[in-house]
Amino acid sequence: MNISVPVGTEVDYVSFSFYEPNEIRKISVKQIVNPVLFDALGHPTKGGLYDPSLGPFQKTQICATCSQDHFNCPGHFGHIEIPIPAYNPMFFDNLYALLRSKCVYCHQFRISRALMKKYTAQLTLLQHGLISQAQALDEIVLDFKKANEAKEDETLEDRMEESSLSLSTAEEYIDYVDNFMKDALADEEARKYAAKDYKVTVINDVRKNVMRNFMKHCIHSKKCGNCHGISPPVRRDGAAKLFQLALNKKDQAVMDRMKESTGSFGELKGFANGQRFLTPYDVRKDVQALFEKEGEITTLLFGARDPRVPSFIKKATYHMFFIEVLAVAPTRFRPPSVMGEKTFESPQNELLSAILKGSHLVRDFSEELQAASQEEPVDKKKLEVTRNRFVDSIINLQHAVNSFIDSTKNPTQVAQGQNLPAGIRQVLEKKEGLFRKHMMGKRVNYAARSVISPDPFIETSEIGIPPVFATKLTYPEPVTPHNIKEMRQAVINGPNKWPGATHVQNEDQSIDVLGDLSIESQGVSSFT
Image 1 (tube, rainbow, N blue to C red):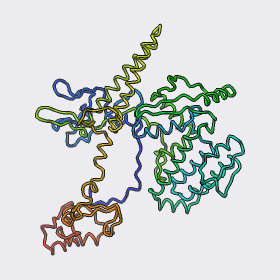
Image 2 (image 1 turned 120 degrees about the horizontal axis):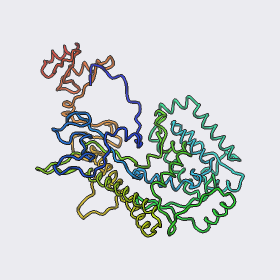
Image 3 (image 1 turned 135 degrees about the horizontal axis):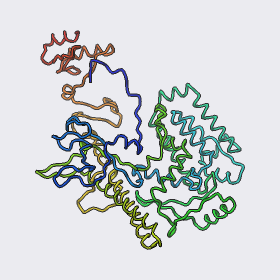
């Protein structure tokens, strides 16, 4: 940092998104395919987790990618190709909710277009900080004339039943909500006020309630509000398996009559003992179709929410729910431990090796299943055994991916007294709340003290530092016309009085150590 040149910009906003498979492949320098880390001589294997392309393995080595030594190489990412899409354990609950709320026939959310318009408008207004306008939409009552739409009206919120405004048709309701949203967004004064006073916490609280009501209406709507089909329920088993249950006799009879009259509903096959296992391919296909048909609402639900975020990173995609390509951290972030002449791998490598081995098994069983299905005549018993082994390999691979990201999602039992290797989530949680976890409530003379409740001396955005620390800790600060008085006084105070300065960097990059100067010399230096 060149402190003689002040930085004239500031961070306006920060947003986070997920890498898509192609983006991970672009930043990667090597595909990891070998689960074996070292050869017989103890050297890192090619295509292994300690491949030289990911960075130097030892301090005396040179990086094969950037030709820098251990201290200057920043490290380079690799990647593992997952042969079958794995569920992202961070979003498995959301994925399960989406499958329960969508129609398997038209691949849309199961609520009517009128209610969809209401929730879309509310989330759009909240995205721009217009809380009161979004809540005002709850004061509209939808009174359908058609019998099937009247039943839909019964599932609306109870607070909407005693409203002063009533609209007779779905078309009028949609037009009214659309015009209401456009007028609210066109109100320049309201938008300026909302953008200036954008309360993230309050808006997120209201948004959570809207999203909760939206998902509740979709899940509780037994019949689709668009095609009127009855979707079979979905069941989960842990964070690795999803099953589709068969319709009961009453609902199946209704669907059979609808098929005969319209002929527009496909037949669901593959049920055994009243359910069928949903492969990740099936789930990805359904979610992809949902995001294509319901792009607006899915972006509002899972995309960037701050109105200041550029539009090119706003759109949400279905890739966030699946892991098709897994990024592998550089070698320097997975350092091996050395004891004597023996080298032990990082705990993360144990999890990554399990993913590599699971990927190889899935590929092998997939090839066996394809070969068994093409045999003539087909051996049904052999085909069934191979299919079961293929499904088991998919589930084991999912458990390995879950363990790498969140070890609590792995149902594998370990020996008593042993713990599973920490996943990414556990590593991050270990760093959470260091100040409050170790310092709060102890007699530490306000050392690094932070507060979560009103305090007359410390703001919630401040940390208390003891005077002995405050006079020792330093940071560079450029001199500008706005702070010249404060900087001059800091130089006069010197390094032994707070707030003071320890060094002064001149325009020729030379540095004056104020601790070596007398008080008179410090005063002279403050005016130069």
